[in-house]
Image (cartoon, rainbow, N blue to C red; front, top):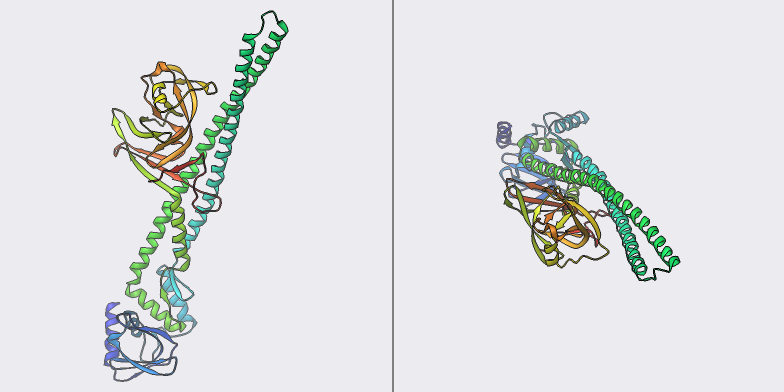
Length: 434
């Protein structure tokens, strides 16, 4: 192709007076790119090109002072000022076929890559998956609200039972009627408490299932966004590479001659809008790698409880919730009340101990904060048990442990119904300010 171009330019230089058939106006550019003119090619004489501007004035320009694109255009012309393939619909069809064979197509006055269509299809897939993620996230939030209401009602019933038992202890033993009335009320209330605890257990299982499916959708969404970024970056690099290809320049020059219009090879406005839109989606995906400390077969991570209590904890994705030994909980300002539900927990050594279920205001690891995190405060008999960072925190994020690099990578997607990055609501999860 380069030999053909050199021969053609040499031919133009050697012709003493080549008259060129009149063509359409096109943009002619100087070799340094600083000067442009809309003009019609009139003729080529020796080393000069004679152009006719729209106002009718003539201008002569040295071939050597024209841009590579203009020289390539001139190289396609024969003695009659026509491209070797001739004019007409057949010539245009051939050029369009050649463009298609090279992964290009005409869009208005721009020649674009056919691969841009793949980006549009990928965006549709991302949008569909994003809607599913918004719906799934809303389902988790609603389930958690229902759980909070069940807990509130259960705690209310427990408080009532405590008052009834206090009244029972203070009545006259000979007052059989009052005694029977209080016992009946306590038994009835206890039955309701058992029903609420059963409902709470079922709700916890339901939340676990919903959260699991939400995590799957979230991970698929993140993977698709990352693939879309790679796809767009590849297309942008292809534009840069092909723009310097002499065969592409020749095709554009032939297209300009046959259509009588000036075309550019560049990314479409649609792709440029896609880049901006992708940056918005990427802004919703927050990620950080947190260093871990290995001790034997376990990893430890620095955690901040309730905003200002720093605590070293064992990373344990097998633990359903965060757990703290009694003395550690006290140092973090966590007090057990009569309303906190008693639970039974299994330790790693096989023992089963008592504990209380409390709600931590916040748990922070690195820049990631989760609010309203369930935590088990162990009884005093488990004073030697390590604090565990379990799934009541980890489950709010996509996470990955790299044992070789000794890092914990947390990823959070903050999505809202309107598609814009939003500030997480109270009770949700959010990145901590740096």
